[in-house]
Image (cartoon, rainbow, N blue to C red; front, side):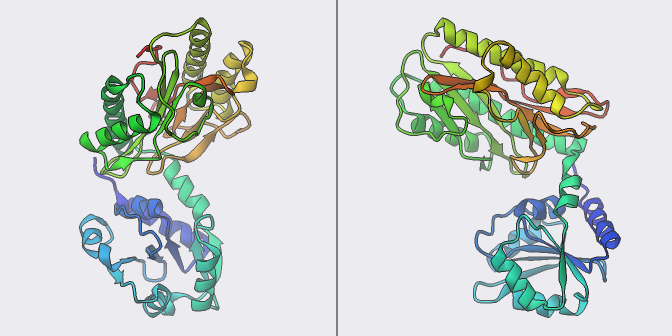
Length: 369
C-alpha cells in the first residue's frame, strides 16, 4: 500500500516547468500530506513544502515542535524547523532568495491576504500564479493504493456505526450519542472524526448540516447520523444512515423508501464516460417523481480523499465527463422543515474498468432502533 510520493513531486515539477515558475510554495496541510506523507495541522504557525524548480530540490519548512515527527513521516527529508520567535518569511528569504527570480506558484484558495502581503514584502520582484487547479487535478483520480486506504476509513466508521447504534435509547441527547460515537472512533483505531459528527433527532433531521445538542431522543423520532473518520494513514470517510426510534409511521416509511430508491438510482448510474450530472439527475428524479422535489435542495455528492470534501462536485449542472479513478459520495435526502428528514450516503469509486465500486456496505434498509 505504498504511495509513490516521488511521482507526485515530479508531476508538480513538470507543471512548474510548463508554467515557467521558479518554485512552488505549498501550504495547505492536505496538499503537504499529499506530496510528502507528513500529516499535520500547524494551526497559526507556518508550514510549507517548497518545490525548487531551479535546483530540482524539495524542502519542508515546519514548526520546530514538529521537526522530529516530520523527519519520521515525510518523504521529503530536507526539513527546516522554524521556532516560534523566528520570522518564517525571513527564513524563507535566507534559504530561497537566490532562486526567486520570476514567478512563484501558490494555492490561491489557501493563502490569506496577510501571508500574500508578507510574501510580496519578502520577494518584491516576484509575481504569482495559481497552482491549486493542477494540484486538484492530481488529487482527483485516486489510485488503487489510495482506495485501499479509503476502504480502511470506511471499515472503521461502519464498525463505529454498528456498535454505536446499540447505545441508542430514549432520553439520551444528540450530543451524548455524538460523544459515544467519537469515543468509538478512537477505540477502533482512527485519529478522530474527519468532520464534526452530525447526530440529529426528530424534526432536527431536516437540517442537512445541523449541530448535535441537548435534544433528547423520543419514540418515533428520525435519527440521522452523518459522520466519518480520519485514519492514521491520512484518509477520510463519510457515511450517513437514518434510523427510526421505537416505531415508524407510514409517512416516515414512505419518505425513507423514496430516499433509498433515490440512493440506489444514483449509485446505479455511476460509470465512466457519462456527464457527472447524470448521477445527480438520476437520484433527484426519483425524489421529484414522488412529489418531494422541493425538499431536496443540495447536490447529490462530493469527492473525498485526504480531505472530506474534494473534487469532483456531483451536481445537476456539472457537465464534466466521469472518468476512471474518481471517488465520491452519493447522498440524496428529503428534508421537511419542522418534521424531519432522511439522508442515505455511500462512497463509490469508478474503478479500473470504468465501473462503480461501492465501498460502503452498512445496510441501507430501514432499521428501527
